[in-house]
Structures are given as structure tokens and as C-alpha cells.
Length: 94
Ligand SMILES: [Zn+2]
Image (cartoon, rainbow, N blue to C red; front, side, top):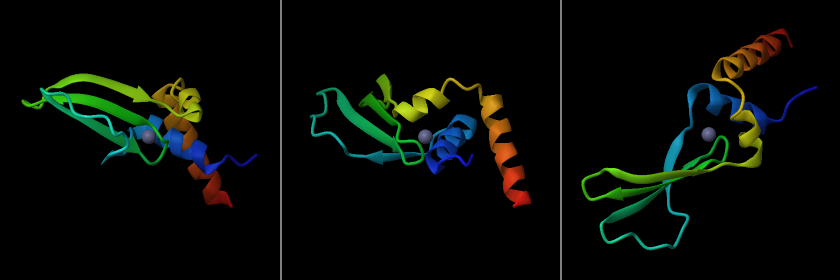
């Protein structure tokens, strides 16, 4: 059975990591001691929220995961790499 592109993209992130882009999604104000930074991964939809002080130090970091990615995030990275390699081999035979 063919998998959806979303699953493939989730495996990509689990294998080699997220592709972060800085975005502005929230209208919340920056703290007086620094700023909020919002990052988004277009491959799997994960959002990373950080509070950074004026020295560039991260005060807090949290992640919001898409439900599909939550499932893939439990897959060991080695297994994610193996699944992607398998799919590449399969594509080569079509
Ligand atoms: Zn991602």
C-alpha cells in the first residue's frame, strides 16, 4: 500500500531533523527581558516556541506536534532511515 506524502515527510524529519523557518503565528507580546521566537517545519507541521533573552540565551523551549508526527516521533531514527531507504529502493524498481 502506498503511503501518503505526509508520512514520508514525517519520516524525513525523524531521520535528518526538522527544517525550521522563523514565522509569526501568535499575536502574544514579547516579554520585557527578550522576545518570543516561533519556528515552523513545513515538512511535518511541528511548531517550536522559544523565549530568548537579550543575550541570545533560550529561557524556555516547547514543541507542538501534529498528531501524525507524534506517531512517527516514537520510531527510532535508525528505523526511520531504514524505512526511507526501503522506499527509495522500491521507487527505483517502478
Ligand atoms: Zn519536521
